[in-house]
Amino acid sequence: MARAFPAGFLWGSSTAAHQIEGGNWNSDWWEWEHKPGTPCVEPSGDACDFLHLYDADIAMLAGMGHNAFRFSIEWARVEPEEGEFSNAALNYYARVIDACERHGVAPVVTLHHFTGPRWFAHRGGWERDDSPQLFARYVARVMRSLGERLPWVGTLNEPNIVALAGWLSPNFPPGKQDPALRHRVNANLVAAHLAAVEEIKAGPGKAKVGLCLSMTAYEAVDGGEERLEHIRQPMHDVYLEAVRGDASDWIGVQTYTRALVGPEGVRRPPPGAELTQMGYEFYPQALGATVREAHAKTGKPVLVTENGIGTEDDSRRIAYIDQALAALHAAIADGVPCLGYLHWSLLDNFEWNSGYRPKFGLVAVDRETFARTPKPSAAHYSAIIRRNGLP
Ligand code: BGC
Image (tube, rainbow, N blue to C red; front, side, top):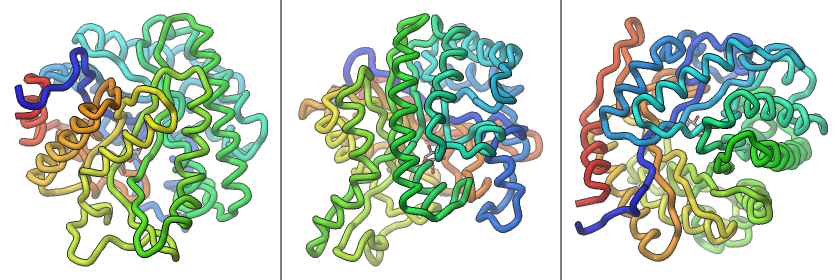
């Protein structure tokens, strides 16, 4: 075998509650989607109706050879009002885990993937200094019900994007533009992650815990080195430094592209570059640089918790997967410990402000019947998984 991956490698796909479950009306995002003046192009509505179709979806991905499946637990369902917990919601996630176990798939569970309960947002969300304690209380409740059955837990999904898009850009709720608040939110999210790690390590269970960070392969051009470090500090380093010193077992890397940074800031992709539906440069090699950076700065093994491409042309997804995995394999060969690769995403799903237009799925979803149709990239990825390597 020319390029084999390590034995026991986790192979699978990633999803998030709000993007696939449907009817997540008690969340801050649902409110954001329905608020006039936000950049949302359409509401999430029924999403992919994973709420009802999870069993068939997990059977499908197991049939495609995936041995791991990343999904998130929705805080807005588990704690619908402050301090009020829903056993029915926790039982629902227990059934999703049952389905994973039945099909021999390891659940990789994220406890917060962008969305939270409305009550939490209304009292100030991550701006409030007691937000880490409130998050930790929810985490403790989830662990009490499900901890014994969770081998892999991610605390927060892309907290760097939550802070940036919610408090600076302003693309996510609460839609503010305030650099000082953005830094405060980063600090509260670091504290929330650390508090969650403690709760998870306290058990029950022996989950291996990590943080899922959005990482871009930044490249300085024309003397942009200083500017690059300035950008990278709140985007990568605040979190990677925290993870270096904490009890996490892995660092989750989520990479889609690179960014060229000149002295004036992040530049547009170079002229003539192939662009994805998100407007990103087609640059799958970025994954090699980010897994190296994540491991170098934390000293922890890496788990690729997201990597993928928004495209209508599935042959470009196949090319993206091959090139990203080649870059990952080279990093592993150079000594970066890597636990697995979870492709974003299993299904064409709700892509936040961009609605249902960008297509990230290995599997297409009919927007009326919710019928699933695997694309050629799904079969291509399965073949890689089955040989645990690249040809
Ligand atoms: C997020 C996903 C999102 C994906 C593609 C990541 O930022 O975690 O929720 O759908 O990228 O844009």
